[in-house]
Amino acid sequence: METRFDMFGNDVALKFAKRFANAGAVITESPLPTSVQELVSLRASQINGCGWCVDMHTKEAAAHGESAERLNLVAVWRETTVFTAAERAALAFAEEGTRLADAHQGVSDETWAAVREHYDDDQTAALVALLGLINAANRLAVIVHQRGGSYQPGMFEAALSGQS
Image (tube, rainbow, N blue to C red; front, side, top):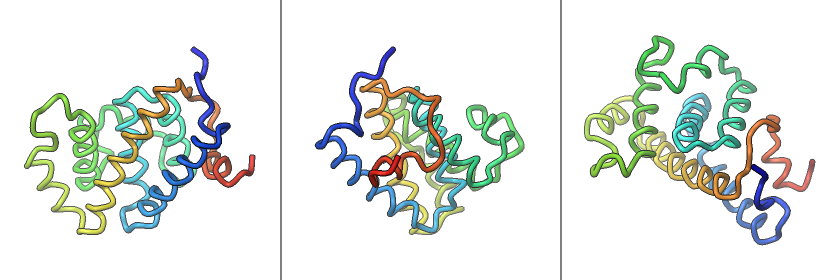
């Protein structure tokens, strides 16, 4: 399967990507831990079948010090002992907020309560925004068949700033 459209090679798409990245910068600069940001992004991307985003977030997480063991276990986090209670709440939130069509209520009250137990208002706001943003990114990449495997840490920011 070949990439259908180069989202970094078209002026309109590039303008959109830059604004999308600016929205992401709000989350990156938030008090939500980087490890949680990458784990949530990775889990949503796995669910959505986005090879590009799985590749990106696995490599970005590793570049920020995340262990291979934890990255390899994200897809089966419920069956592991390597994630904290706060990370488990965020991963449950990622799954329920991504699989909206699977439950009429979206994120359950139980999961929401767990998120609020572990994250303050600013972190919760960032978590909600992050999940919306990564699901949108997944859809964009899947639609154009942007494939994983060639991503290098920092590549996305470089593409947006005109560096390669």
